[in-house]
Image (cartoon, rainbow, N blue to C red; front, top):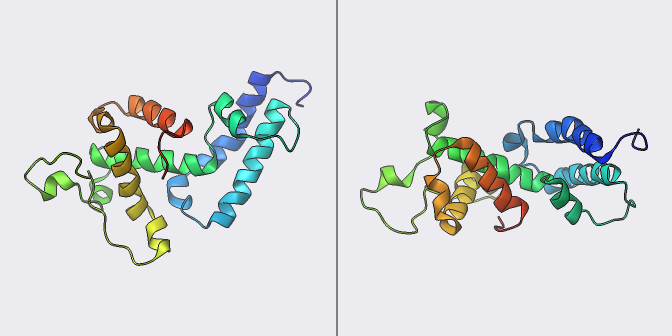
Length: 173
């Protein structure tokens, strides 16, 4: 199939079959053990190498950039940030939003560089990987380094900005 199709068709197939399956509910299952995510990353790299028609040992970091595709780890961070943006802007169910504490509701004073979300204490690494800790942590880190992000009122614009920040490694989690 890859010899019969051009690059854009192969990339469309990649986005249709690989990317959609990997991004489905990744905010929930993306906090799993690194062993499982590494297996998915290997499959993702293999599929991307097929799209670009390169050697099976070729580095993939440039391929991800060229295709404007997030690897599984970055995809998780991206989706968690979108989820937290929805919580922050009250675009999600109130029952879900009530699981997170926004600092503006905790303090009546406006302090510069204050975290947007309250971080709960975690005793275990498993809890730190959960969305209840990693979500506020990632969103706080992004809003500290890029303060304009929390002022964006358009979800599509937010997604575009966050994807650029994550895909170009302007922030590490």
